Every structure is written in C-alpha cells, then in structure tokens.
Amino acid sequence: MANLLHKKLTLGPPSNRELTCTSRSSSELLDVLNQRPEISQYVGEITLTNHGPLYTWLDRSATHWLESDESLEILFPLLPKLHRLAFVGCDGWEFGYNRFVYKGFSTSVRLAIDTVYPRLTSLKLIYVAGLPIDIFYYLPPTLKEFILHGPSWDFSSFPRLPPSFASVKSANLKACQLERLCLEVQNIDAAMMIASVTDEHYGAGITQLRDLHLDFMEETDHRFSKRILDYVRKTLRNLEFTPANLVVTGSTPEDIEFNMLEKLESFRVTLPIIIFDVPEIFEHMADTVNWLVEDALGRLSLGSSKATMKTLHLNLLIGFREVEMEDELEDEEIVMGMLDIDQGFSSWSALDRLMGEDNRFPDLERVIVDLHLSPAIEETYMVSFAEALRQNLPILKKRKLLTIRQTPKESKCIMESEQSVTMAHC
Image 1: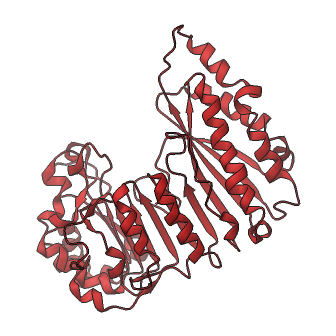
Image 2: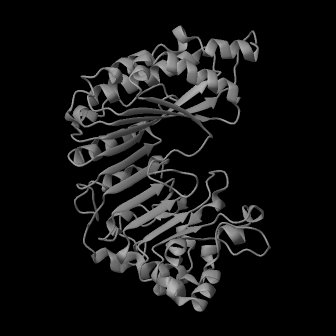
Image 3: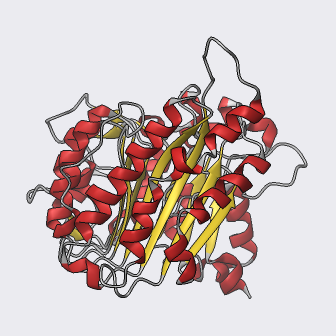
C-alpha cells in the first residue's frame, strides 16, 4: 500500500491552521520518513507547489516558501528512487509574486535540487520566474520529459553561461534525448531560448521526440515551430499546437509545413473562438477554421502522416467579447445570430469533408471537439453551439467518429501540469 500511496507526492507551503490541504510541507514529510523510513524507497515523483490552503494564496510567506525552506536539503538525499520533479507556481501575470522565482530559491533548496538533478527523467517548470535563458544547455542526460509552461526569463547573464538550474557541474553532462517536450511560452523574449532547442551545441536532443506541445504568443515565433518540426519529422507521434495570435491579429501561421511530419498519429489543436462579437464573430470563426482545414490539416493530408493519423482533437476556447453597436441587441438576438448555421458555422463543412472522406485519412478513428467555456457564457448557449457543430459535421457523425464534449474552462496543455492541466495539457 505504501508503494501506491507515496510514489507521487506534492509538497506545498507550511500550513499554520487546521485546514484540509492537498499537499504536505517538506518538514511534515521528513517527520513521516523518520517514523517510517521504508517509505523513502517508493517515492519516485515530487511536485513542489505554492498552492496552499485558500487563506495563504496571496500570503507571500506561503507562496514563496522555497526562499526559506531548509528541509528539502535533508529530504532529497533520502529518496533514491526520485526521478521526476515538478515546480508548479500559481498562474496570474498581475500577481507576479504568486510564481516561483528561481533566483529567490534558498541555498538549501538549490543544494537539494543538485542532489537529484543529474538523474531526473522528468522536469516540469510551470509558472517559474527568472529562469536562465540558456536552460537547455544544462538539462541532465537522463531527461526524457521537459515541460516548460508560462516561464519568465533572466537575461542578465546572457550570453555568458550562468550556473545551471542545479549547479555548474551540470554543464559537463552529456546531451539528453528528450521524448516529450512542452513549450508553452507566453513571452516574446523567449525567441532566443526557443532557438537553442535545435542548436547542436546545447544540451537538449530532440531527434527522438515523440510528443511535442507548442504554444507561442508572438506570430514571429512560428519560424521556430517550423524549425523544431523539421528536426522531429521522422519520430513525432503526438503534436499539440496553439497558433499565435490567430484571432487577435487576424493573421495565421500559413508557412508551417505540417506535411513534413512522417508518422503523426495524434494532432491536437487549441483554437480561440470569440462569440457575441457581432458581426466579427463570423469572420473570425471562418478565418480560424479555414486555417485549420487548408493550412494545417490540408497539408497533413498531403504528407505521409495521412496514413498514420488516428486522432484529431480540437480544443475550442469559447470566449466572450462585449458588443458595441449603435443599436443594442437583446441577448437572445445575439445568440440566434451566432447560431445562424449558414452564416456562422458553414466553414466547418470543409473540415467535415476533409476528415470524413475515407481516402484522405484512411486510419482515422476519432475526432474529438472539446468546448471550453468562458464563465461569462451560459451553459444553454453551449448546448446550441454544440448542436450547430454537429449539424455541420454530418459525415463524421455518420461514420461515428465525432465526439463533442463540453468542459469547464481550463488551461490547455496535453502533456500535463498539476493545475488541472492535462498535458500531456502541460
């Protein structure tokens, strides 16, 4: 039983009240190991989070507990099977102090990381601030999975190589060969870091990559997407992709050659759908779907992946935008206009024909559409939205390939994060 209960553990801020908490503190785990030392042989994965009980969420002493912790330095050497490590800070750009700050980690915490870093097979950095821009140089040679979600960067030492994420000793390690990589980078300055992924002098090897998640904010970063895909074209099996600024700028990343991928089995795409924005909603939706059909899936259907593709998974982020018109419309009128099938949803018919025709993707097993709702949208509207989609995807529906699901609004990474993110949904 100890094997199952203690294989994956979450350590969070110390709690000073009698509240139920999903995580325990590092000192509490030390106390447990002192009483039952055999448990240390089972711990294989630890997540360090600043998610404490609700009352501590904006308490700096709680959210920044790694700046003063002294227990991890004692704890980590006691865990010989620890090979997976995650840092999960709170989201929210307006509250920067909710994130973990790498520079603020105590000396004790850094020494603890150094103990396990050279043997890690998985490293997840989720909402961590102040990371060295050339972190890829220092990844341990054993690493197979690297999740980088919502970071911010420290350029103060660039281009001089700074101490590694663990210690300068790691600079002498051989290059790793990643099998799973998530880059969800919402910062234009990350372009230099992204370039290092495919630099042969850096520590990250991606020629064996099977799972890849790319999510960039700036349209110009798509040239790096193209470069990465070229490196992994022979090995990649699962791709999650979020186009940058697709709706905000009205432009689309047409130049990404998805057809270069030779053995893709699963393609997951996250797309923003803005509703209640009359009349632009129809133009935005059509542009978004046209990019998906013509530039993404259309190119895939021309390459060798057309014979290996089994799953198409669409995440539609349904958002709300205020309506500004001279003549105000009642909510019901807006919704009826939004659900005008001929005007708003006809662009989906092209997707139905492309994916539904047997000769385009002969081994296709399922098309999943997840509707992620904004809190501002009534659930009844989404029922109508889903029905409108079904009416415009009759071929997929007839072949029993189509699944449409309505889910609460969440983060959007496939590989997996610890904040209701399902990455594999970093």
